Length: 102
Image (cartoon, rainbow, N blue to C red):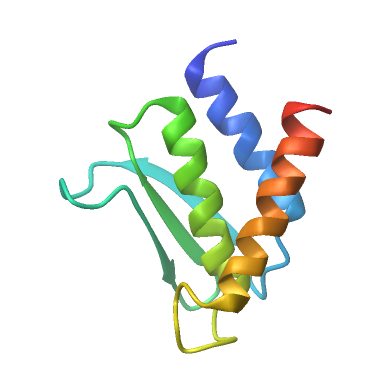
C-alpha cells in the first residue's frame, strides 16, 4: 500500500473514532520547521494540519495527537492535561486494535 493511501485510510478510520464536538478536516501541508502538526478551531469545524515532510508513520502519530486535541477541546485549560491524555490513549488504542490489527 502506498504511503499516501495508508495515511488517508488511517484518517478516515480516525474520523469515525474521535468524539469531537465538531467535524474535523485534515490537511497535509508545509508547516514551520518546529511544527509537525496543529489543531485549530474554526467556526464550524476543527482543522488539523500535518506537516507534509513527515514519514507516513510519524504523520499518523501526529494526526492521532491532534485528533486527541479536537476531542479534548474546551474540556480543560492544559492542552496536554489529563483529559487530553485519556483522549489520546483511547484514540491510539482504537487505532492499534481496530485499524492496524483489525
